[in-house]
Image 1: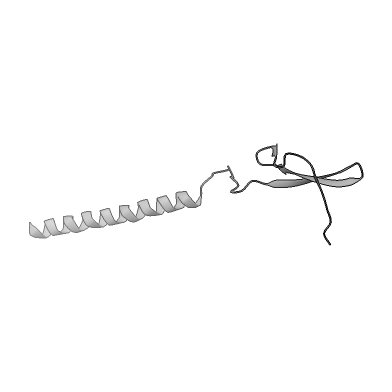
Image 2: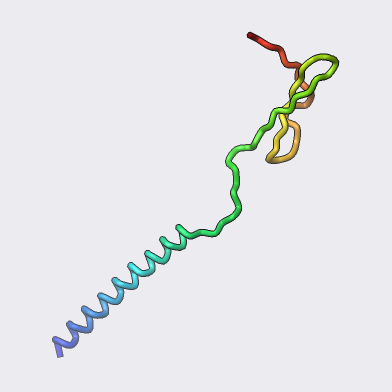
Length: 81
């Protein structure tokens, strides 16, 4: 009777260990094969827009991520070379 009990306990422990490793590998494979298509940028994408007005070169920054002007008005570009 003791031999049978020892064998059953050993088999049960083996099943528990195998199930633990199987669950861990399933969780790991789910993380690797994630189908999350939404890419979220960490920082806003800022574009510089240029124009000539009254013979002067001007620029203004546009937030392409959120869709608004960063600068309140056009800034005249001054070359500092």
